Length: 293
Image 1 (cartoon, rainbow, N blue to C red):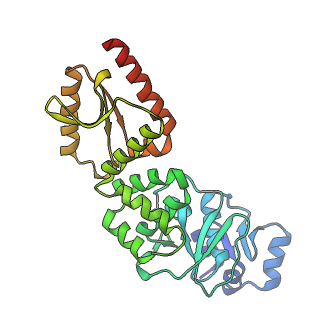
Image 2 (cartoon, one colour):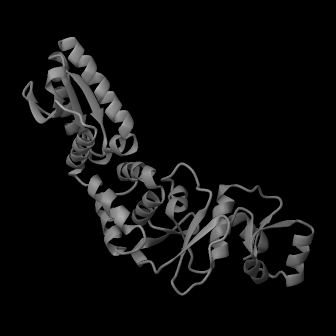
Image 3 (cartoon, helix red, strand yellow):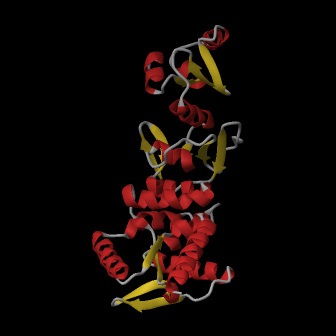
């Protein structure tokens, strides 16, 4: 492959090995570096001066530096696959256990052997396949990871495939956190969220609430009857189908007609902003109690 073809395919990024394989001598490579026609990005990885330095360059350079068999992974892989909005400051790459590159500024190296089902190629780069990428990126993002997982389950990948990837990688770094998110993301996630809210209310010392309170022919997830405040807890958006959404609207309209104030929260609300959720509930309960009094 010619030098120009390599540079065109790789956004101006090239490794020393690729340049030598394309016919350049060691002196010719060094000459380009001295004249600043090529700019070093990582050891033995360069960017041609007539190409701009952007996120694609960061990703390609990190993977080229990591060497043969390296795979883009984590949030960087999610970004490359179109499942994350932004490339993280540090690009994650996975290499086999027998490899010894160490993490360096801008590149985080993880050593492990990936199953064939967890490896793929997208836009010319080796990358973890979508199911494993979703899991690893969600763990890497910490508290914000559940949002990425929920969005990916809605748009990019099915739950069974993600669960299979989880099972293949049991015991690897982050698998415990991934397992907890998958439990919350399963079909029973609404009940998981309800139990979380109950625990929050108990720890806050709240009183006057009842679970599965009957009203208007429906069961309110969690109600403050005296204040006529209904708290509806949703699970994750990925398993909310049209039929369930329509039923929720009918229930909410019936309760509003009977004078109930409806508050709706998701698992993400309870995990990501618990203080705000409790404050909103307390405010509406106090308001409703005052009106009733």
